[in-house]
Length: 269
Length: 356
Image (cartoon, rainbow over all chains, first blue to last red; front, side, top):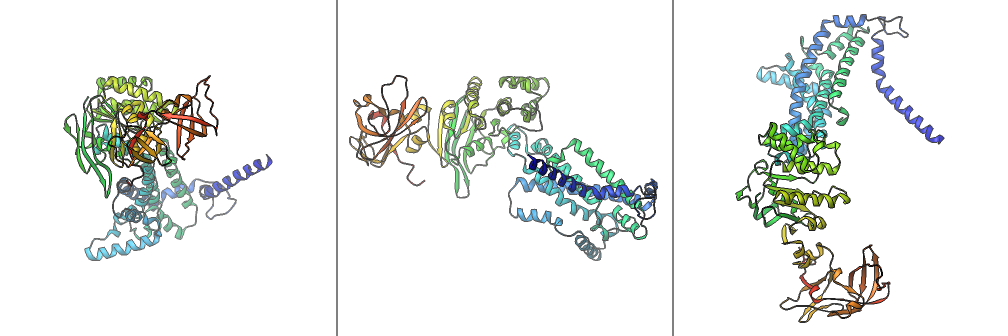
C-alpha cells in the first residue's frame, strides 16, 4: 500500500519535472521580457512593458515578421499540398521505388539545416551563373528552401493519419455510385482533415522559426524575423528579444489552441 | 430484381489464380452463398462482381447487361462490407442518403426513402447519430440500409455476420434472409461459416483453390457431397480408407461396409456421417453391423460424441442423442453394437490427400 503510494508520488514528480524542464525556457523568456533593466540581472529591479514597445518600434522586426509570415504561408500551402498528394500515392498505391521515394521525401529531416542552407546557396549561385536568374536576391529562394522543410513534415503526418483509415470505406462510396473524384473529395479528404491541419500547423511553425537554413538565403529587404532578431542580438543585450519572443509564443500558442478546437490534434500527433 | 450471370471468370495474380474459370448464376431473388476455406477465392469473386477487382478473363452480366469492364460506381450493386465500412464523418442519415445523392435524388423523395430504409432495419430513431455511437449490430443494419436504399440489382454481402457475437448471429441472419426474400433481392453472400450458409442460402456454392467444387441446396450438398472435401467441409464425416469391392467397401482394418458400389472406381474413400452411425441393440439388425469398443465419450448436452474402435483398428465417431430414460448406457472401454444403413455409406473421390 505504502510502496504504491510512494511510486505514484515518484511517477507524478517525474512527470512534473519533465514538463517543468520543457516549459522552463518559455516561462523564463516570458518572465525576462518584463524586467526593467538594460542587462539581465536577478532579481530584477522592477517590471515594465517598455521592451514590448521597443520590439514593435524596430522596423526590422516588423518587416521580418511580415516576411516570415508570408514565406511560412506560401511554403505551407505548397508543401502541404504536394505532401498530401505524395502521401495519397504512398499510402494507396503500390509502385516501383516507393520506399526510395518515401525516403527521399523525408530526407531533409536528416540533414542538418545549415548544410541544407549552404548547399542551396551554392546551388542558387550556380543557377544564377548559368541562367542569370538569382533566387537569393528575392523571397523565392527562401520559399523554395522552406518548402523543402515542410514536405517531410507533411508527408510524415499525413501518411501517419492515413494509415489509420480503412480503404473499404472508399470502396463503399464507389459501390454507392460515387466516381473516383467524388469519393476522394467527399470521403477521403474529410477523413484526412486532421492530418492535413496538423501538417499545416507544423509546416507553418517550422518555416516561421527557421534560422539555420535561412541564414544564407536572406537578402536586404527580405529578412525573416529570426534573422532580424539574430542581427539585433549582435549589438544589443536588452530584453527586447525576450519581448519579441513572448509575442511569437503568444501567436503560435493561440493558433495551436484555436485549431485544436476544430481538429483534435492529439489524434494524429 | 435482376439475375446475375458469371461465365468462365478468371483472376490471375502472376502465376496464382485466385478465381479459376468460375461460372455461376444467381436467379432473381435467389440467395447464393459462396462458401469455402480462406484463400479459396470467394471474396475475390464477390469483389469482382462489385467491380473492385479487374478480372483477367471471363464475363459478368447483371440483368443481361455485360458489366465486366464497368467501374464499380456504374454497376448498381449494393454491397455490405465485412467491417461495414460506414462513413465515420457522416451521420446515419447521410450514410444512407449517400447513394441517393450520387443518383441525383434529393429533397423530400430522398428523405422519404432514407426514412423507409432505416425503418426497414428498425433504426428509425437513429438517423442523427454517428456510426461510432452505435453498437456493432446497429452499424451492420445501417450498412444494410445504405446498400438497399438505392434498389441495387444485386445485393452483395461479405461475411456480414462475422463481426457479430454468436448470440446475435442467428437472429440477424434470419432477419437478413427475411428482408432478402420480402424484397426479392438477388443476393450473393460470402462466408467461411457453414452454419451461416446452411441457415440462409437457397443455394450453396462450395469453392476451393479458385474453383467451384460443388453447388446445390443445403440438403443436396450435405446428403450427397461430390467429394471428400465437401463431405468434410460441411458438417463432420468419418473417413475410412480401404478399397472398393463388388459388395461395398472393405476398410484397411478389414471391416466390410456393404453399400452400392456398382461402377465405382477402386480409389475411393468411404465417408459416414456420425449421426448415421447407430449404437446399441437397434444396430444389430442393420445390414452393416459390428461390435466395437468405446474409446472415448464427449458429452455435449443434447448429444454425446462417441468414438469407437473397431476390431481391425478403424476408428469411427458416432453422434448419440441423449434422452432422459434412455436404457442405453455408454461407458468407456465397453463393447457395443454399432451399425449403419448401406445408403449412409458414401464412396467419394479423395481430393484431400491428393496434391492440389
